[in-house]
Amino acid sequence: MANIFESLFLLALDDEEGSIVESVESSLESILAGAVLAELVLQNRFNLTDSRITVTDQTPTGHRILDKTLQDMIDAGKPRKLKYWFNTLTYKKALDEVGQYLVEEGVLIRKKKHLHLVLAYGESPDGSVQSKYSLKNRLREIVLAGQPPELSEKVLLAFLYHAELLKLVFTHGERKAAQKRVKKMVANDDEGSGLGETLDSILSAACEQDL
Image (cartoon, rainbow, N blue to C red; front, side, top):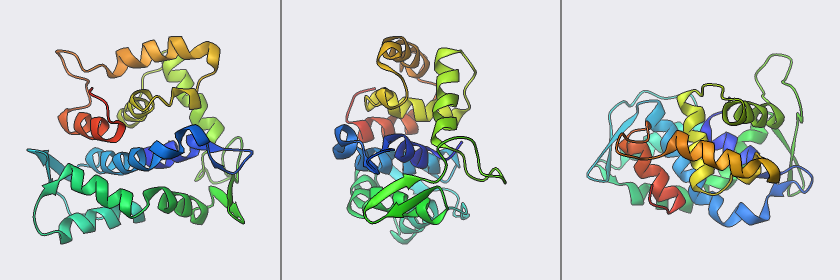
C-alpha cells in the first residue's frame, strides 16, 4: 500500500475531472497534514509529550515529503506543539506537494491543471506503482470481508472514518455496514483505539473531532 497521505490523496481524486472531489477539498489539506505526521509516527521518528513533538530518530526516511518535515522539526531547535506543525504543513500547502510528488513518481500525470491516474487498474510491471483500484479493493477486503489490516491500513481507515470520507471507498449501499465495522475497529473505548495516544491526538486534530 502507498503511505497514508498518498493513499488519501488518490482516494480523494476525481478520476474523470482530474481534481480533488469537491465535497472533500476544503478539509483535505488538514487531513493530509495529519497523515504526514501519522506516517512519521509509524516510522518511529517522534514522540508527543504534553502536546509537543520531540524528534527521537533523525534518520532520513527516504521520502522527500517526510524528510522535509522531519528536518523542519529538527531545525526548530526545540519541541513545538502539534498545532504548530499542523499550521506549518497547511501553510506549506501539503495538498499541492503530495500531488506534485505523485506526478514525479509516475503515479499521476498532469494535463494542464488537472491530475489523472497513470494506472486505473493493476500495478506497474515492476510493482512500484499500485493503482487506486487496488487500494480501494484492499480496504474493502479489510472492512467487508474481514481481512486483518496492517497498522498503516488501520490508521488510513481511521482517517477516512473520522473525516467522514468512507464514501470515497464504499458504495451508498455498503456505507452503513462499513461505517459500523470501521467504527468498531478504530473505537477509542476504555481499552484504547489500538493506535496509541499520539496517533489519536493527530487524528483528532486533523479531523477536528473528539475520538
